[in-house]
Amino acid sequence: MSVTLYLGCIIRTMYPEVEKAVKETLRGIGFEFEEPLEASCCAPFEFFSLSREAWLRLNERNMSFFKSMVVTACDDCFASLSDAFKILSTKNGVNPPEVKPFETVLLERLRDMKLRFSFTGLRCAVQHSCHLLRPSRGVDDAESPRIVKTILEMLGYLPVSYEGELDCCGGLVFEEEASRTLAGRKAGVVERSGADCIVATCSHCIRQLRSVSMLPVLHLAQLSALSIGLSPGEIGVPETLVRRIVKR
Amino acid sequence: MASRSLLYRSGNKAPGKILEAVESVRKTGLAFSLDDDARDRRRLLGLPEAKISGEGLSEVRRVLSEAGFG
Image (cartoon, rainbow over all chains, first blue to last red; front, side):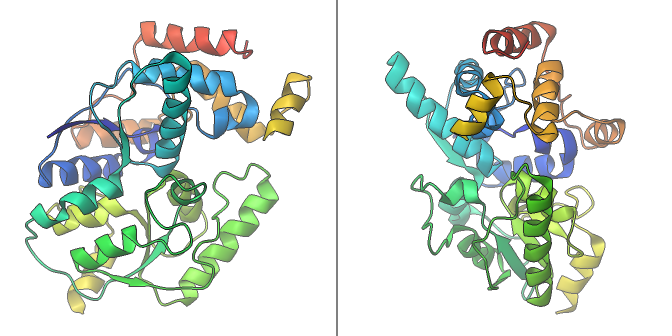
């Protein structure tokens, strides 16, 4: 099956190892993909809360490059593209491509994956992204999200629960003090939960939590790529984390 | 969000972080800029250059300009 891969700005500019992991996972579960390099920022949060017009027009331009179902690697991009395409389809009478987040596509195809080895015992604290859950876009249960945890379990990892799991990490809170407070609180609770790492599907969450957490903060794709046999170095999984997995 | 949008259009200044991201989109088409380290890591991993063409960038700038971002 051929899809369009939309990586988003943060992964493309800051986390090439995540990009590699997303691409290798998609290949591993039987997808071919096109990557429209001419697409721009999806201008999320209605262009950072300043201009709805700019948000819609940039995504109208982006839509012209998408020839098949769009798979997003960042939940904020998923939310932005989904919402913009819905409005554009009504306004312009066009039939927009379907948009799905990486985790949905992975879950749907996971049964086809052939794991080379099965890790057991790596404890993962899931950072549920606001953009995936609120407002609900039909991907997961906003009150009790399961999608990322289910994938982790299928891959042989152990999701851990912690207090305030659904709380925002503050990644897109532009007031700096509030942003830092939310991130610090989240990181502290997760560190006390006994988790070995934090797993997220939104690049804002990854960026935000990496700035404050002592634990490795990974994109779900890094763990799925590890399971399908990529070397940790290629996909940015710290060796210390891998050694911890093997020891258990 | 609506209030912030209205305030910005009335001439008030938006938070610095937002303005930086807007400026980056205007300059590169992406909300964050690629540094040399990331560029090297991309090359080592065999990933394509994270850059849109000059023509594409002109289109993005035109959209932003028409939407009020000079």
